[in-house]
Length: 367
Image 1 (tube, rainbow, N blue to C red):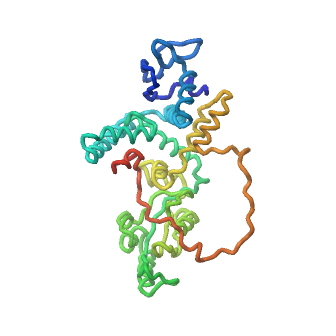
Image 2 (cartoon, one colour):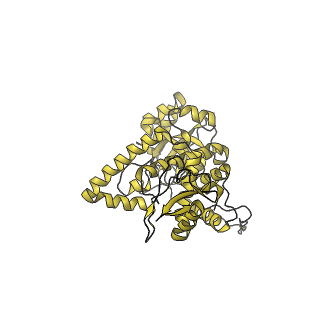
Image 3 (cartoon, rainbow, N blue to C red):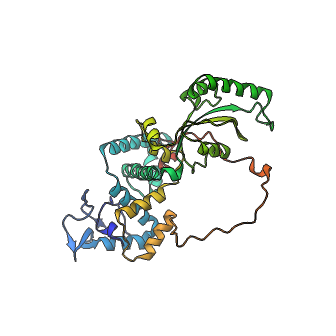
C-alpha cells in the first residue's frame, strides 16, 4: 500500500461495518486517525474492541473485503483532498445541492425517502451525501485543471452556431430546397451586415441557443455527443473564424463560429465561471480518470511494490501504460460507403447537464 495513502491522511474515512465487529474510532478531521497514537511508527486509524488497527491493516482489510472498487473510491478521495482545498464555497455548494437532492427524494418517495437515498448513495461508494458532493466538486476541479494544462491537445474551443432546419425532416433532399436556400440567404445577409450573435438571435432556428447569440458552450475533441459533421467543422476553425454552411443529416444546415481558441480569450469570455469546469461538466466527461491518475503522480503516489493494487486501481481508471499499449494494426484500405457514413448518431443539441448519479435517481440537481 502506498506512502501517499498511509502517511498522508487526506482521506475522509468512510464509515465501515465489519461483520462481527463493533468499530470505534476517534475521528480527527485534519488527520483521519487516532490523534497522536502510533504503533511501530505507523499511525493508528481506529480501534476494534480495543485492538489497534494501523493504516496498512486498514487498507489490507478493506481491499480483501471489498475489492478494488472500495479502494478506488478512497484513492480518488485521497487525490481530491490532497490536490484541492475544501473551501467554504465548495462546502456551501454541497450543502445547497444536498438540500435540493433530499427534497427531490422526499417528493418522489415520501416518508421512505431515506432508504432510497442511502441505496443510491451506496452505489457511489459513499455514506454521507455532502461528502460525496464535496468530493465530486473537487474531482471536477482536478479534471478542469487537467483540461487547462492540455488545452492544445484537447483542441478546446468555444463555439456559437446558427441552424437552418430541413424544410421536411422526413424527406430530406441532397441539396437545399428553395425554402432552405431562402432562409440560408437571410442568415448570410445578416452576417454580412452585422455580428454573428445578432444574426443568430434573429435567424437561428435552434431555440435553445438563439437567445444567447447562438452560444453552444465550450467543447473539445472528445465531445462525442455532438453531431459528427458539426464537431469536425468546429474543431477546424481558428479563433474568430466562421464556417461555410455545414450540412448535418440530423438537423439541417449550420454556420459555426469559433469565439475562442486560446486560453486567454476563453478565460476572458468566461470570467464569471471557470470555462474548464464548464467543459468537464458538459461536453467532455471523459477526462476524470486520466486527470486523477496524473494528479496522483504529481502528488507522489507510491504503492511500495504492491503491483496488484496498483494494477487494479489503474485498470479501474482505464489507465494503460505506454509499454503495455499494443500498436494498432493497419487495416486494408477500403472505399467509404457514403450511405453508411452519412448519418452520425450523435446530436448537436446536447443540453448542458451537471447532474450527478445520485441526483439522477431522483430527477434532482447535480453538480
